[in-house]
Image (cartoon, rainbow, N blue to C red; front, side, top):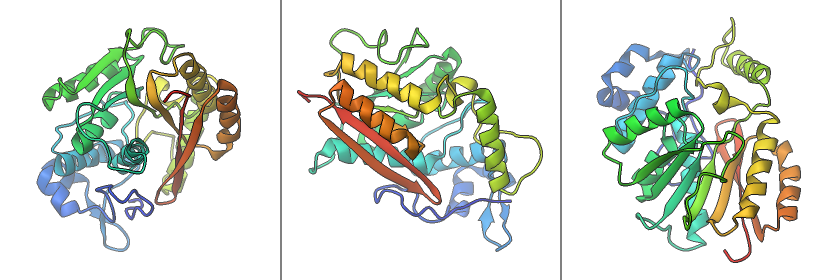
Amino acid sequence: MGGPQAKPGLHPRNRHQGRYDFAALVRACPELAAFVRPNPHQDETIDFADPGAVRTLNRALLRLCYGITWDLPEGFLCPPIPGRADYIHHVADLLAEGGAVPRGGAVRVLDIGVGASCIYPVLGHREYGWRFLGSDIDPAALASAGRIVQANGLGDSIELRLQPCRADIFQGLLRDGECFALSICNPPFHASAQEAREGTLRKLVNLGKGGPPRLNFGGRSAELWCPGGEPAFVGRMIAESAQMPTRCRWFSTLVSRSASLPALRRALAQAGARQVRTLPMAQGQKQSRILAWRFPGQ
């Protein structure tokens, strides 16, 4: 039962430092009370292997901390809010170039694979006032994201667009003359459905759960895996970014496996990237990083 609640390593501006305040979260979202229970140390927690509990915790966090009305259909990837907020804060520092973080609607961000949760656009807009274009290959995911945008009156700040070709990332998506301060992405991690199931089983074992695999954070196939996994997807992103190098001041993506970095750095060198940055992130025991790059002229 339960899961790690202390979150060392988060960005200093991340609102989710320390343990969750379940009393405040339940006041903001009373339906969370049904999932809150004491752990063996008598601290309040939820069952982090229960998809309904995780989804309701997210709803409470977004309502309490960001004033966001949010819901997610069953089966879609349910993002861990502290980690997603960390990505936004780290790339905000990247855009700051050592000065003040740029804020407001003049900063336009492209979210590749916005997903049903629309999580990066709502966090980025609430924290910094940025405008977003969110793309996805799944019409059902875009429909869910659209409901979140509409429920929060964010139609002027968050645009959603279908990527018509599953094999493309930037190609066929952007309109003539569109440019962005930044692109962000949380790419499919696994190389196959079987690998995704095995990864889920490992998570459940780590949480002390037995039984058949189930996804505590959900996820449909396009969210979890693609042929070649994370290295292949990011490799395609690098190749396409080189074909339109001035469309983004910075391109970026999460890279879950440090072992993927050497090949991706070689791909960036071959693509002619002028500057490459690796930004480490940590949430509890989970280690990740952002890979960011830009081309000459940016």
